[in-house]
Image (cartoon, rainbow, N blue to C red; front, side, top):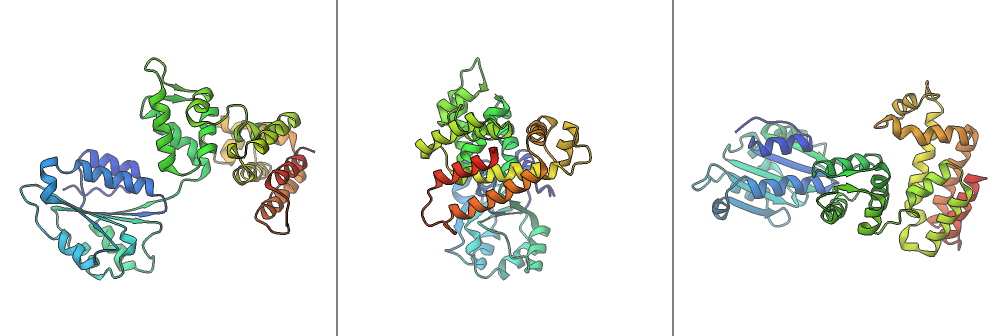
Amino acid sequence: MAEAKNVSFDGIMSDLKARHFVPVYYLMGDESYYIDKISDYIAENVLQPEERDFNQTVLFGSDVTAAQIADAARRYPMMSEYQVVIVKEAQNLKNTEALEMYFKQPMKSTILVMCHKNGTVDGRKREYVKAIQSAGILFESKKLRDRDLPSFIEGYLKRRNVSIDPKSTQLIADSIGADLSRLSSELEKVILSLPEQDRRVTPQVVEDQIGVSKDFNSFELRDAIVNRNVFKANQIIKYFDDNPKAGSIYSFLPMLFNYFQNLMIAYYAPKRQSQEGVAEWLELRNSWAAKDYMTGLRNYGGVKVMQIIGKIREIDAKSKGLDNPNTPPGELMKELIFYILH
């Protein structure tokens, strides 16, 4: 059994596919997608189908004790090189002393997978954490930030030999958000819809398969605001007001806040006259991503940007009912767009 210690998702998956296993995989965090991907791969690929009946065990943290898990992990495999023990809902375990003792002397023939969702191991349990790390891999599955979604989408599709343009990428990211399980499901639906002779995702494909209008969406609204296109921005806002399911203030406020916050930061870039300089300052993936900020620097003065950020905070509070007894979300959005563009 190899002493692989790579704690990135890609690194863990690479080691698993090469059959470089460690005795313990403690998978924790707020993003269930990566935890499920790793545990499912181990469940489906470590043992042969005929070995699983006697050598693969699934337990639930709410139904067993740490001592019972440790006892299961100490068993020897039957007519197999390994046994696999998967513990779901590991966050529900009350007392972990018996597991800590097991982690200090794990069985080399057991692959123990602990799935700890919606949180992480208590940082005060230093000896417990140290014991996990000595036994194998402690992996934290973090929620992706909105700015990381395009990379996830592009990478997911590239692995399936599918290309996508930047606009389509942003349309999907803005429409679905950071729920990676749902996002991957929607991407699979898009992939299946593509003909073999044309493996490209376009805005039209996104509209047809995911139901996001290629003309009236958050990407186009952001573009209209960046370019101070008053007519187009109001057209999109009216569309959303008439079609609430297509988009709402609750999804647009974070997008607008993120843009103007970054635009404010861009004003302090040492090389703000250069697209490459702004991209580097904002830690963007490439210089192309800085194009909208260069436009924003031309269209919005620094003082106006500060005022817009303040207005977004005010509208956000009102959308949550603070100092706002009865103004509907659609009217609040119109008020904000008018303020930004005038």
